[in-house]
Length: 389
Image (cartoon, rainbow, N blue to C red; front, side, top):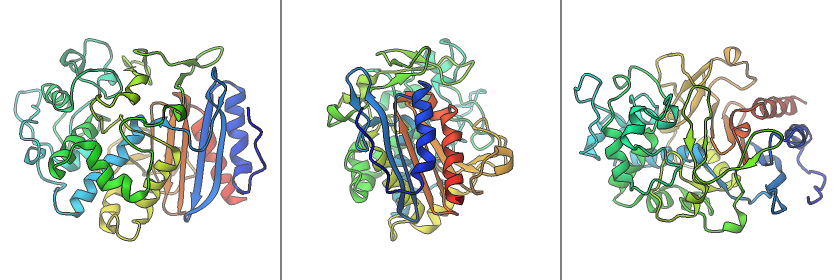
């Protein structure tokens, strides 16, 4: 492994021990951690292996499969179209997708709005959250956007709409395929296919040079690993890994990231670097001189769930595209009220504490430790200790 030079970033002395411990305990194979405050770098740190077997060290420009770290990109595209007057948050999605007409369990047609899709209050679900392989999404052949399904986006939407909603739109919260549906809304509202629309609305303006729906530089792509004793193993094509107990799990296709013909999954299909995601989050934090209007940033940051207790975790609400910290004491978190947070199943976590002007991106190549393991709160606590030092 390459020798790491002493850091010029003050916060790094607090972050490095957390990363080193996770690597030494074989909970992570490799990681990139970026922390910025008021636009200034506090930590830029890459450690471990991008490919353990190949002997490729992790680097700051390593590419990752983003999984749900794709979601804020699609959210930003939707809100850019709202700002342009081409999408209305509270209009039925049928205005752009006339055929997308899911029904309630009683057979009545539901009215699903863009706001409900952004806030995961539309009544949709995920196939991987079903308890077994005989759930309604599985029977309908729905893709979660990370498998080698061989279908296109419109066919996946047809399958999603064929399954009855879990609850009346706006009356509950459930993590879901809503962002994949929003990808199709972006296509319809922009008149472009989703990869081009995302480039035009988001990535080009923000200099997210490596972010897209297919990897353009295979040599820089991190190998994906799965936690397990005595050490993480390489994720296999078609392997099913459950992120939560009692769920059937996600069927993974690591090769999907190289397949330009795979349908663009707005909720899970992008690839890019940690810096790419950081650029987006910083633009959303600041508005970037009008790139995102202040009133839409405020709407993103507002809890849209009417105070419901969410399965996402105690003390959390949900805004437009990501969780919003409602109660730091209940969440047992040092973050400020209103902090945005989410992650990605391939092993990622990120948060934006606007009160402190703080943005942190942690991308790893190890599921699910890098998304929901002990590494995530340990890193969070180390960052806030460092800020107080």
